[in-house]
Structure formats: C-alpha cells, structure tokens
Image 1 (cartoon, rainbow, N blue to C red):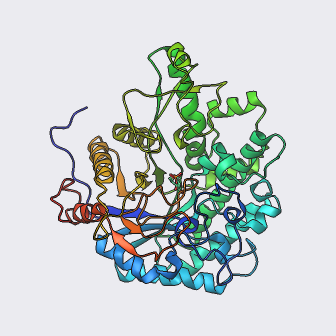
Image 2: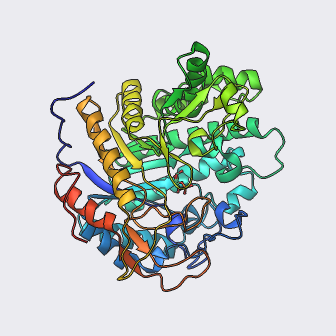
Length: 479
Ligand code: BG6
C-alpha cells in the first residue's frame, strides 16, 4: 500500500533511547548491590565483562545532561533488581534505591519521561541459587520488587515495562536464560519458567493498576515478522509455526491470557508442556497491559526444510542470530534471505520488515505500540578530534523511522520510538566493540581508558530529527 501523503508522527510522540542496567551501569558490586545471574555467567574471555561497562553509575549527571542535549523526550532504562534487593527479596538496599531516585529526579528535571523496565535479563543470583524462575517463589519475589518500585518511584514514573525479551530468555536460554547448565529436560524446564514469568508479569500489571491508576504498563518482547522461504505452502506453514512459537505465544498470554493454540500443540508434541492450573489462567486473564512495547532488529526467514541449493553451497541455514533464536529444525529451518543486506555481525537489515511487524502486532492486539529497541551494532572508529562518523547507523535508523512512519500511515497506533542504545554499552554477548550508542564511550574490551563521552555524528542527526518532531528525517548535519 502506498500513501500519497504520509501521516506525521503524532504530537507528544516519545522520541527516546534505551539502555539496560547491567549493560551500562557498571558498579557491579558497589554500595550494597548483590550479584545477578550476569555477574556469575561465563562469557567470552576476550571480550569485556559486565563489571564496569560504561560506568553510568559514576557518570549519571553527565550522561543525563547529554540525553537532554540530544533532546530525548523519554529514556528507557532498567532497574537492577539485585541493586535494589541484593537477596532478590527481603531488605531494600537504600543506596541502590537512592541511585534510581537521583536518576529519575534528574530525568524529570530535564522533562524526560522515565520509561522503566523492571527486569532486563539480570535476575538476582540469590534467587537463581534457589531455582530461579523454576521456583514459584520467584513469582512472589518479583511482585514484591515491582510493588516497591511502584511505591517508591510511581510519583515520577508513568510508563512501566515488565520483563525485557522474555521470549529471548526462553528461546535462547543457553545465552541469556536462567537455566543452570546440565538441567535435565531443559526445554520443558524453560517453558515452565516461561509460565512462571507470565504469572509474575500478570501480578505486576495488576499491582500497577491498583497502586498507580494513571500509570501505564506493558510487556517488552522481541518481535520479528517471519517470512516463508518461498510461496510453497509447506514453507508458509513453517513460517506460521515459527511466528506462533517465537512471537505470539508471548503476546497472546500477555494480552489475552490464553496460550496460543499452535504453540501449545508444539509444546505438547515435544513433551514441553508446562504445569498450568485454572486459577493461574484466571490470573493471566486478569492482568492486562495498557500498551505493547517491542524490540525489533530484523525479520526472520524460515522454510520447511533446507533448500537443495543451500545444502550444495554448504550453507545449511543462516547464521542464528536473535531473530532465529530457538529455531527447532524439526519444525522449521532458518533460511538466508537473498533480498536483504547484513550488518558487520551478520544480522540482517530489514526496515520494511519493521513496518510489517508493527502492522502484525497492532492487527492482532489493537493496543498502542512503543518501540523499545531498534538499532545497528557496529565497530565504530574514534577519529581525530574525537569524532565518530557513523553514517551507517544514521542510514539504518532513518530507514527504520521512514518505515515506522509508513506503519503509522497504515493506521498503526505508535506512541514512541526508543532506539538501542542511548549511549555505548556492552552487548549481550559480543562485547563493547559491538557499539550501538549515539554517544561514544572511550574504552576497549579490556582497557578502560578514561571512559570519556563523545557525541557521534548520529547524535547530531537524531537531535535534529527530534527537534523537527520527525518531520525531517534527512536533516543537514553539521558535525
Ligand atoms: C536485545 C536486548 O536482545 O538486543 C539487549 O534486549 C541487547 O539487551 C540487544 O543488547 C542487542 O543485542 P546484542 O547481542 O547485539 O547486544
């Protein structure tokens, strides 16, 4: 569908940017913070760990001033559960609570709307030791933690996100999940964890609505449209299967309180069915989101089986990035998409898929949408005069914003866009070298250097885009 005239971005649109606590804060063991699963995980020894990251904890004022200069209308960040509750439950760590007080108050002073994720991959280690999300007690701990956050910060925070990319934690359990290595029957355990997280989310949404009647809360999964490798009906069916298992399982539970039928039959066939009670299903139906936040990096392409060509080329399936996480080759095969370019990390770049994804979500659930992650990871180079000429990132973001505007023109209700990431931070498993930020942080994988902040060319670009309210996505940039 072509629009002779595109619809402008709505007034009050939340132009933003995102980070997460464990990837940006550093201060991993300071002022009473407890360890999280991230602090205990074993990562690639050649890459940065998560101890100092961008040291945002000690650069708070400087960083928020830069966000204000960028013109952000919202800043999406996560609270570190283990900074607030070092044991996951029990005593609140007052120093940790004061840190988020300072951050939120600063944001409000700069007229930046705080958009708070309660949980972004970093489960407190103390809970993990007791079984993590396999233990139903973690549901109670999450609700208690969420209630504390609503009570303490709810006077200044209107927008809340429950759990970041729950679907990636389940589908990519070996990388960012909370499953101890060697767990017997890991898939079944993960789907039980998934059910528990859904219950925790529902309880947080109910608590939020009770405690903060004017606040809004929603889930934040990673959603990608799924293309069939060809028009062959079997390929279309495979794409349909994957979309149910990757995307709709999570949003159907969050929005309708029901298990997606295809995903349920997949779990039943494979022997992964979680234990579920009628009372729990009633709770899931009662917890309703006000909006859907979603993260999008690229589309996925799947087929019923490998193509003969791919086999001959020794190109069995495409490299498995997060879009294809959890691919189960017995149900579908991840395929290359010859129509798309890739980034330096082999992730596809698909702006049109962004529009398709937004349309699919809105059509299914009819809730307002906000994009909470979208961006390009790249090896940036710091050049003379402390400049970073990241025109590739500008191109990526511009193309995605153009498509988002087309989705809005299609009738999709979108109220914000928060690219990943506000400032350089450590990637989930590819180090600090895979940079996403508008602000360069001067450090390498192992050498912390001076951690100075430098504005990239994309900073100047986004600043002007925001200043124009999205009317000019291609401004003249002086840099
Ligand atoms: C999302 C996560 O999966 O993608 C972020 O919510 C993450 O935490 C981002 O950093 C980009 O992925 P990566 O692997 O490039 O860091």
